[in-house]
Amino acid sequence: MANFVLLAKDDLYLRAYLGALGNAALATALCLVLGYPIAYAIVRTHGAWRRILLFLVMLPFWTSFLIRIYAWIAILKPNGLLNELLIATGLIATPLPLLKNNFSIQLGLVYSYLPFMILPLYGSLSALDEDLIEAAADLGARPFWAFLGVTLPLSLPGIAAGSLLVLIPAIGEFVIPDLLGGPDTLMIGKVLWDEFFSNRDWPVASAVAIVLVAALAIPILLAQRFLERGRLDTGPQRSSMACRGVDARLWLSLHADRAARRLLVQRVAARYGVGRVLDPLVRGVG
Image (cartoon, rainbow, N blue to C red; front, side, top):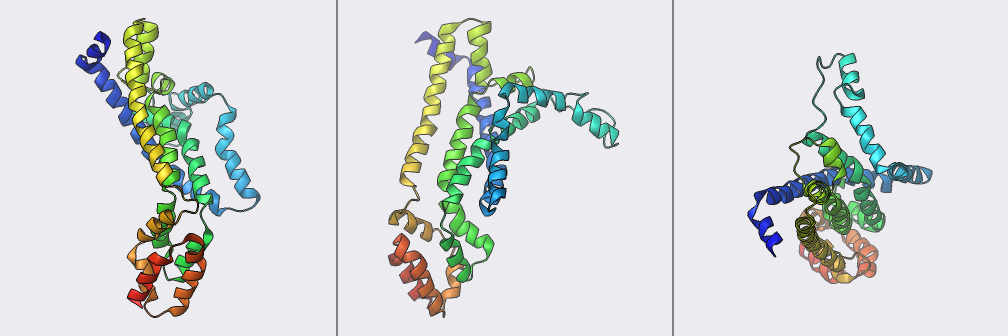
């Protein structure tokens, strides 16, 4: 108990937890921003090109994680490949500080964990029924609004799974902040390593690890509950929620189009059980 009291009193550990959470959350957001378009593009690709793109996503796993991090050191250091290239092209006169800072940490985190975001998103997007997108287009929805109203809500389970797969290991990451970060880098994984192997204070290190595991259990439980409630298999409740989330612009073109109404009922209602949700909307604008 005294070790947990020490953690509460010493702000070093609080700053380490918050630093790890901030870096991991930023890396998760960047992975989502980069990974969603990549996964969407892979889903829209057909034939051999889809297999090639999936192979390229998984290709970094064929190389040791540690070797890949050391390769980034060789690229980002003051006399590394990137600075030498920029100086040779005349874009800069002196080397840029690309290593031992937050930039290099975020670069390492995003590079290392981006595939863990792309693959769940690919699985979620590839499971979507194309009839929903076609129905939205037939009803006059532009691609942007169809994406916001149909594709994005139905891909939320993939977003949740990918965010979880990136956030959880990134919080406890040690190698990236130790090799790519500077001396002022404060993340809980590095503090935990120092307590175990530098200070050899195993009771305090154990307390740090217990608090970390307890803190990580919260998003895991929340994500598990969200995924259980948000399965997009064939449940009518899920389909109804998705249809309620569709932007109102999607239904404005139904005001005098009975053929579009029949098309919608045929393609969507029978399969997803959402006729009770869509039919009042169709009658209301008709």
